[in-house]
Image (cartoon, rainbow, N blue to C red; front, side, top):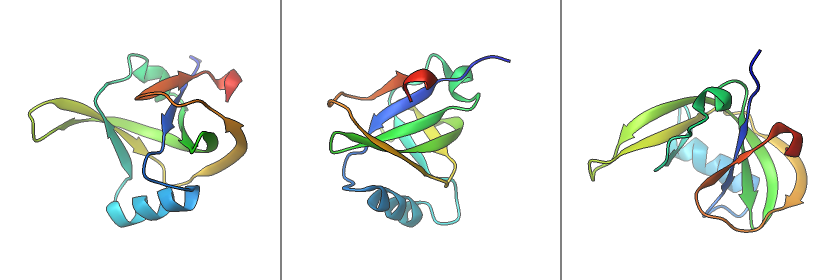
Length: 112
């Protein structure tokens, strides 16, 4: 069986895990929550093989959310983007410091 890889992303605009969950519930009532990003993961098959997105809040990794799909989304500007689709279940993790970065990063399971 092939391995999997996780993604790491800053959670901009949310102060806490509860803020993220509340925003997702309001934005995606009755549908699958997602995050739309400009770049498509080159390791998409590994991400979809059991990967999660680890959310960073105010410099701390606080939770992970399983990734269940990647979908193309066409922006109003005509540029195709990647919608990272999530399971609604969020697992809190031990708070781990993480310096700011742009976009998302791969996170190897051994580092998760």
